[in-house]
Image (cartoon, rainbow, N blue to C red; front, side, top):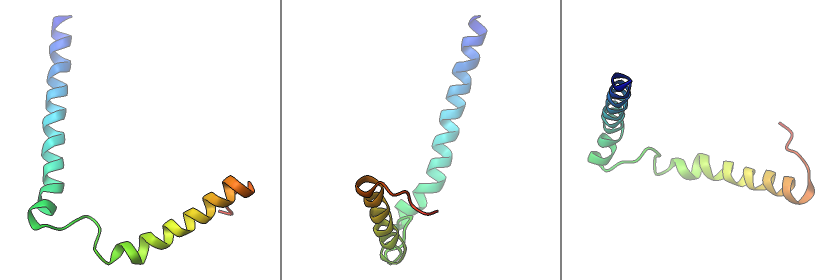
Length: 70
């Protein structure tokens, strides 16, 4: 049984190290260059209309009890 505990400790350690390396490989370039995952103009062009539509859908669901036609 002690070898099984050591096996799981090694798996968790390996997973944690790989997670940190992959996370660093993805996010460090954005941090180093001073950019973000979303473009500055992309927020208004795409995300704002989607949020407005979701607000209308949520309002219809909560107050009018109408499910969205999807």
